[in-house]
Length: 189
Image (cartoon, rainbow, N blue to C red; front, top):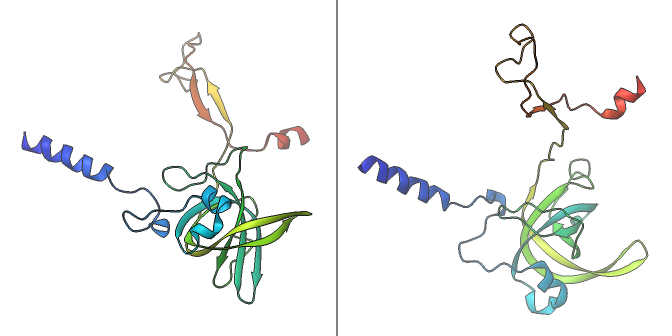
């Protein structure tokens, strides 16, 4: 009986652990500044910690460091940007040192932790925009999600191979991953 109680206690303890990557972790009880608050009242949130993320729009390397312009999206429970058709705007993340634009490509998901700084005025195409700015203390570049197509194999799990299959076909919908090739490749052949 004690074994079951210890197992249950261990499961509860592990479920309380944070799933945020170590690079994005902040001290327990830290109040993080939401992006919308920094956008609406930037003077009130300067020098306060924040965790923001989104999709990279532009990377600029300068002599004083790197500026990453990010399209902001809400973060899910483990800190990954939940990319959707809604964005509150953009922000700039300032990093010390060089960041390779070939690794930090336009369209990749990224999350930053840092300290909110004074907003900067800039342009998005010809539109003048006030960018909330984050002095970065931690960053995490998320791996790209593999969106390979799925097909349904209706054969029975027991009769998957032709030498075991009966003379009739049994239909059970079972998802099967295809080779992940581009469908346009098949049209060109």
